[in-house]
Length: 537
Image (tube, rainbow, N blue to C red; front, side):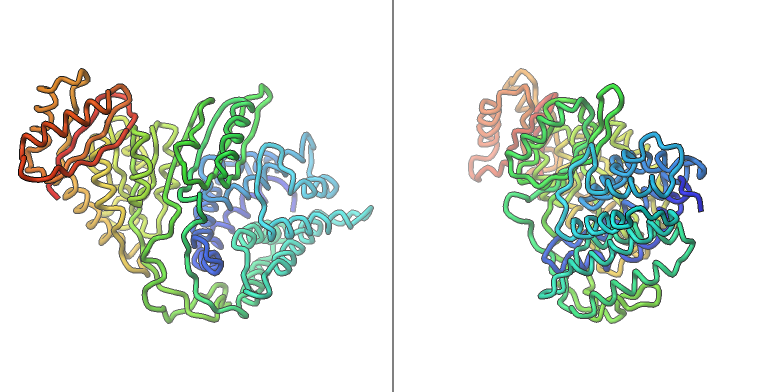
């Protein structure tokens, strides 16, 4: 078949189906190495976004058009380091195609030879991926002056990548690189599309089964290495100097990072960075336009892997992928927290929420991606009217996972302290797996009730900007209307923090001198007034 956009369109459709079915398996491969058990979940979300984006392309368009559209989609909606790796691969291919009018076998060889050298991206390739892609590039180079058909060229490239995955498998532990398995899957889907042969995917699945047959240790998601407690996803627009400054700072922090981007003819670029760090706010860009700043806790859910073993095994395309029985896990609630307060980002993430700092209309695609969960239900806590409107927009485009159950539940939170109350109450909720869509009504009810109870037990009020003690006393009285036992204080950017904290403590002590003051304080850094909340529990 002609090597044009139709190949990538069909391959992404097939990849989305395969990745969705293989997600638990790839997650388990991640867990075999004591990692975070999310590569499969991330791969499935990434391929689903790609498949949806490719549907709008003209199948007869140039291959470069499809690859550039894929890179744009992966910048906005890719998930995890594996999503960035795929974007970097496609970005390298698109750049190598240049102005070639047709993708001849010779042009295809030049494209594949660029696989490890993207021009606007950086990937800390794993040893397995370097072995896979490096070996595949060498295999194509060794064709010499011979010019087989394009289908044969790509098939040799994909097959050698699979051989590289096998060679990179740790013989002592049986550890298979999950990111490498994902990239090999995408290559196999392209190969199967070009040759119109679904048997290629059958063979790929059989190869994975053969690799895992010698290893049966159950997955154990581990805490991240020191210095990498949080995962930060950043999209920034600007000139290359803006990127250089940000990369220098992240490198100085010792963060693990990968990025992919594109630069136009005028030198303006857009980049997506995936960062693992213990200092998420230090990763915030200081120049350029920040399109997205998303933070989540990198630690695994405490409940994963502790339940009984399932009996059904894991089978795909008629092939039993795992000799062992996969562990039955819990399905954590997906909670998204919107905030204008940088000082709350870390606490919201540690509560278990996916945090969007200063969300805007441009964050719609990010919220859609973050909302992906096996149950299909996500609770979003807005911090003001603008973020509430954004949530409404996103909710209107996502299909309901079950009758009467919306994909997006919007909490009635009105400010940052409301968001904190909702996150702490709802992000730890879970239902046992197998959950999936069948658990959507139950989880939706739990999230609705949890958000309602959290907001009923917490009342917040703004403090006067001038620090007037009488105004502060009135705000405390308003926040105490439900009978507060504990207090939360969020200091704004313009406020005199030490004065406000001292004043609030003194006024609280006059309310009940017989008991100690339970007061949590944050240097929120948000624009606008400081906030105080009284909590009944």
